[in-house]
Amino acid sequence: MTDLFRSTAFRLACGIALWSVLFALAIFAFVYWQTAGLLREELAETLRLEIRAVASDPSGAARRVDTWIAMDPHARHYAGLFGPGDTRRAGNLDSLPASLPPDGDAYRVAAKVELGQRTIRDEMWAAALALPDGSVAVIGHDSDELDRVRDMSVRALGLGLVPTLVLSMAGGCSSRAGHGGASPRRRRPSTG
Image (cartoon, rainbow, N blue to C red; front, side):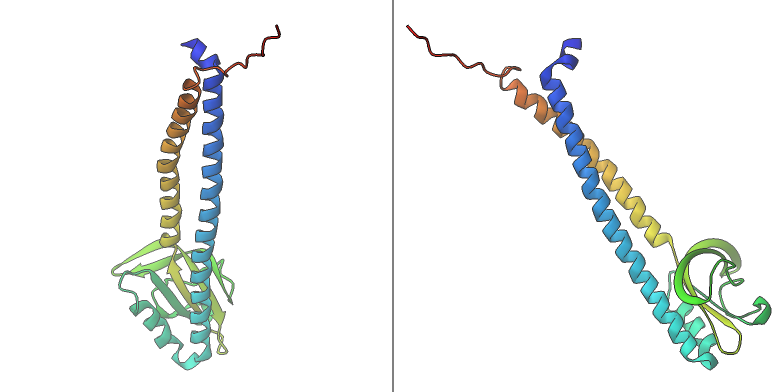
C-alpha cells in the first residue's frame, strides 16, 4: 500500500486533482463575485431610487414610506419616517439606525423592525435622506436574499468539489495504469 503512495501515478493523480480543484475554486470565486456584486448593486440602486422618490415629495413622504412596506407581502421591505428627536412618524422601523448616514446611499445596517405584534432586530440594506423639514426618511430591504445567494454558492461549491476531486484522482490513476504505471522505453536501433 505504501508503494502506491510513492508511485509516480499517484503523485500525478494528486497533482491533477489539486489543479482541477484550484481551477474549480477560481471559477467559483469569479462567478460568486460577479453574481453577489450584481445583486448588491441592483438592490442598492433600487433603494437609492426609492429614497429619492420619497424625498422628492416631503408632504407625501409618510404615504410613500407606508406604500413601500405594503408593496411587499413577504415582509422584506422596511421603512421609516422620523422627526426631530428620532420620533417615528410612519413605517415599521422602531428607530432610525444609528450607523446609517442620511446621504441617499445604501449601507448594510442593523435595525429594530416591527413585524406584526413583535419587534425584531434584523440586518438590512437601507438608504436614508434628510428632508427639508428636518425629518429623515429611511427605505430598507432585508439582507437575507444576499445571504442566501452566498450560502447557496458555498453549498454548490462543496457539492461540486468532491466529484471534481474524485474524478480527477480516478482519471490520473487510470491514465497512468493504462501505461503499466511506467513510461514506455524506447529501444535504440541495433548497429550491427
